[in-house]
Image 1 (cartoon, helix red, strand yellow):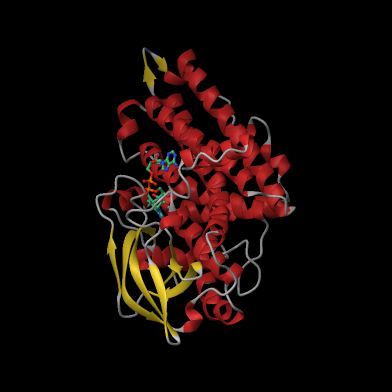
Image 2 (image 1 turned 180 degrees about the vertical axis):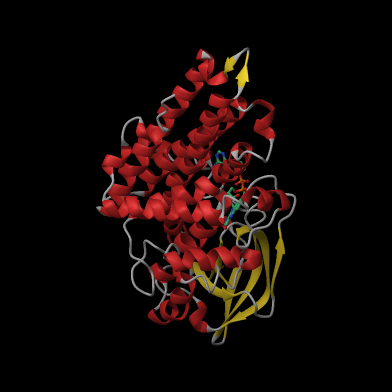
Length: 389
Ligand SMILES: Cc1cc2nc3c(=O)[nH]c(=O)nc-3n(C[C@H](O)[C@H](O)[C@H](O)COP(=O)(O)OP(=O)(O)OC[C@H]3O[C@@H](n4cnc5c(N)ncnc54)[C@H](O)[C@@H]3O)c2cc1C
């Protein structure tokens, strides 16, 4: 029986250049070798070998790959997006490791750091020798970071940091954190080594989503930082929000990878599983589901590619990224859930990746701006009214 892979339906490969296709092939291979055989077990046990993966991904130039200089690969936005898609086809947690490292922690330093800070941190983060995290969310302030409580005050030549961050990806394994804190001048970013006195972390346990990812709480208790720990080039919420735009762009692509893997699994399963004397893929209801899911996947892909081309042309705006994040994560989650139905009881088993992807996408729907927050961003753009508060 002839079968066409979902993204071949409209021939998306023809829209890519050779570099993008080559990066896709390399990342797909590394995910097949280093992630796919182990990730169900990692997810079940709630662990991830972050250091090993960071070193592997560092060798391939995937950490901070869209940044230039300081040991970063300097690839195009589309190439970075394609890499995120392949990583998340393995697991959203694995893509999160790379996104937080490159688009949040490294990007913050690359964009807003001093030359000394860039030289000190970025090359070793690009190789994966050092792992970074990004602390914006607090226990009582998620969608509304402007009201954060974490505070940094000057004490002579030093800063003193007090407060806490919650739900921080990579925190329990990180060597450094980029931490956003309130100061007398407004919100500022600080580079905080995780092994200095006053910094403690605790792993967030009992997660039912993104289990192959390390998530933590960080507490800062009178942490003394040198004057040059602050990122000098930004004050205000613009700093963390522009980092989030970078990371959301990777999610626009990444979510498609999880969805593609679900659809691929569901098609394979439907073609081999027989009920009522024939493959369930031969029933019209199954085909209707698969056709609709494949159409959504193509639409999401074209949107991601358009945003990527805009990014490479310097025309990408935060609102455009909100369109992509809102649509692609929402549709990826719908695809994952529908694919799960096609697998019947096997759909709830960790032997298949589908429910793992669906559970992961619940986190992806929430972090980097919830769906509702992106609706508010777009609602404001469309009407001119802010409905945030
Ligand atoms: C696995 C995981 C990893 C994460 N990693 C990081 C990380 O590395 N760094 C980091 O800083 N954060 C991280 N986060 C935190 C994430 O960004 C926040 O969870 C997210 O911003 C939402 O905040 P909240 O959970 O406090 O929800 P809340 O802000 O309390 O929102 C709860 C609900 O209310 C809705 N809501 C809030 N305000 C409005 C409004 N004005 N109008 C309508 N609805 C509204 C929200 O959309 C949501 O549905 C992570 C979260 C998860 C789950």
